[in-house]
Image (cartoon, rainbow, N blue to C red; front, side):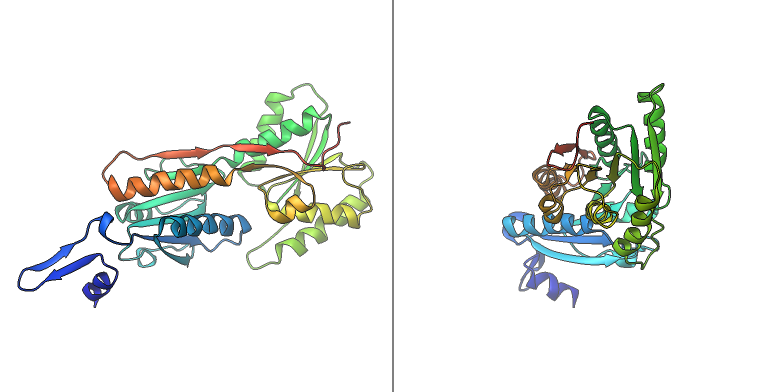
Length: 299
């Protein structure tokens, strides 16, 4: 039963004729459960790996559950875990579900944008600022005709356009959003490649640079340029968001969060949840850093 399971995990112990007692955090192996939204993302997997590696280093028990982001309910939340780490994009989430996660020692890991209503310990990876940093980098290298590759228009589209209007007013800067039309269940890489490649081939006025919004997009953009007969960076430049080994091997310049910053922040929040469960909420922001490689040419 439940008590036996907690006893096996050394969470509680029994004294004959006296009762059941709870062991303190210093007397047992702590448990961290990852709830990962069912959104196909290499980035989510990399964040999950960082949680797992931290658990291995600290000797925490690690578990993971994939849950439906759109229909997440309280049944998806474990009955017991010292800390729950929920990895998701910043799509609207059910406040009551989040309140239950919070009550059960939840830490929220968010990408892109931090909703102002969220009263929960969180790590916010500032995707919007990373996009703008990448655009500014291209601008400083002389690029005035940029395609940014993403799925159907979202918050990035609005942020980019407002930024361009405010920052480059009066300059002849052209920003074109290339919609890759990726739907749930699609092979996103193949579909995006089939859309971007012919547009690059057929454009009479080709862009000088591409901005890819994630690590898979960076790889796809590079392949699309090859198939369109364009050399990187001699004919066209590429900058991406988020890093991965495959992206580094291609020599693509990126704006990304640093894994050590994320791991350090996660360690702080896990310890807070374990030892200071009633403390004030912490919202920790991870800034982006530029990693220059060989994919952007000054013009």
